[in-house]
Image (tube, rainbow, N blue to C red; front, side):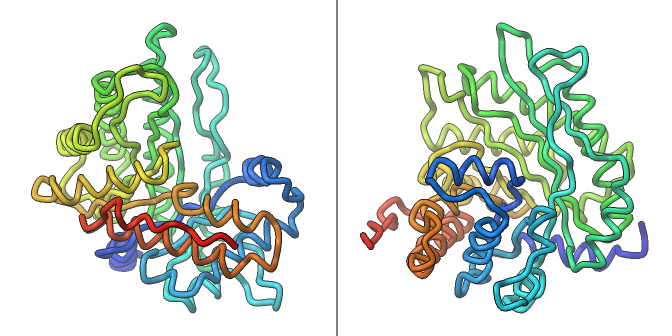
Length: 348
């Protein structure tokens, strides 16, 4: 792994530079098409390309976003005037990233649980993506809490943690900073305390496996979910309760040498995702040995997608809406977000 040490450290630090976060735009074709369907946008490669071009050409996006996570289709696409998206990203002063997992699949012998696949052939894919200009990667594991079904099982946590660690080691060997993403899903009735317990167990196993695989912590980014009650839990938590529980759990499990924490929004509202991140930085910064920022998808993109809805004439206003959410989350990453900053969006 020695060949890329300095480059990996520099890339990881740049990914979580002060005031910057990561834009997750690595939705698979299927997921992207589902979102298009809701808005009546044609589910074609042409429209996916147009939407991704809209995002990547937002003026001044690099002021708030260190880099986007791309999907395989996206990293191979170009703008309508022929400039490769990777070049667009680099010229804007951002770092191209790539999703490398093949999705969460049903886990044999574990009803209702998933394991992420994609290790086969990963070394070669990493080499190809590095040659194309990617400098970081992402692999997502999903953990489901269901007290009645008895999930998550230890087998599910171990299998996903092991896959995350093998992926991360391969990335560092091939020159890509790994984003390690163990997502504890927000769906369900679980309490804040139950989420804490499962997140605690998951992170402990993830870092055990990362150590076993020789992963260098200062050359990786952790992308965790927040410790938060399930959507259907009758007792929701305050912003400060979520922030404190999350930081406490991370402090307990995440080595101080990890280059940074970049949270997923995980189905929270855009405002909640910003408020929770802000509270962590405004009130618990002294307990964080690592930068704490965002790696959001819908919590940045959704206003832009809804406004655009496939209409080319709406691109400029859609881009303003995306930039606004990036700016708000940038503020949250340094503890200066306030709900009063949620400006009403222009009706166009």
